[in-house]
Length: 301
Image (cartoon, rainbow, N blue to C red):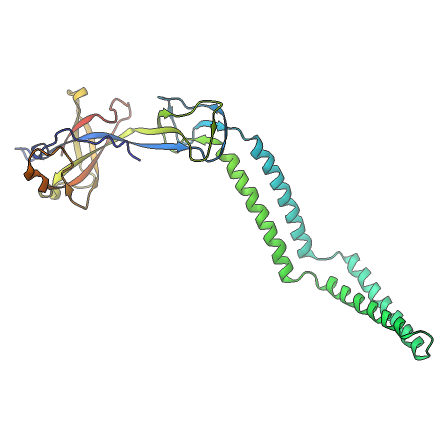
C-alpha cells in the first residue's frame, strides 16, 4: 500500500518535457511504502511496545495479545495428539506376543474340546446342542487367533492415521494462534500511526499500527511518449525539493509504465486532455529521514 498522496499540483506539459539542454524535467510527490499491521487473533492487548515516531526493524515486537486461553487450548490439543500418536503406533505394531500366544492356546483348546464333543455325540452321550456350542466356540477362537496374528487391516491403519493427522493439524493451528499473539513489524521503518491502547480488546483484522519505510521514497513522474527512448531502468536522476533548495538528492529509475494514460494533473486546456503520458517511478534513498512523504519534488533526468 502506498501513501497515495498524489499528486501534482498544477503540472503542465511544460513541467514534464525537454529543457534546452536535452534534460527531461518533471514534478511529482514523494511517496513512502507503508504497511497496515492488523491483529490475527482476538484478545486483550496485554502490552504495547510500538509508539508513533518510533523506528523499528523487521521482526520487532509492536504489541502482545493475551495468550492464556490459547495456551490452555494448545495443551489440550497436544495431549490429544499424543494419544492419537500412541494409538497409531499400537495399531501398526499389532498385538503383543503374549496376546498372540494366548489366542493360539485358546484356539487349540477349543479344537480339542470340539473333538471330544464329536466323539461323545457319536455315542449319543451328549445332545446335539452341546456339540453345536463347541463348534461355535472353536470357530470364534480360530477367527480371534487369525485376526490377532495378522494384525490390523490397511483400512484400520488408515483410520487411526487420519485421526492422528487431524489432531496434529489442530495442535499446529493453535500454536500458530499463540505465535500470532505477538504482533511484529513485517518491515523496517517508522511507526506513523498507532490505532490502539493497552487493555483494549482487538479482533482478527482490526488495524493496530501503520509502519512506513521512510528510508526509501518514490517519486512518480509522467513523461510524453517521445521521451521514453531516453529513459531506462537504473538511470540516475537529480531530485530537489523546496525545503532544501540548496541540495540535490540522487535517485534511480526503478519502474517505467508499459501503458499510456491521460495526463494525471489539473487540466489547463481542453487540448491537454488528449495528451498521453507514461508513468516513471524514481526512487531516492533517505537514510537520515530528512525527506518526508507528501512533499513535492522536482526530478531531472
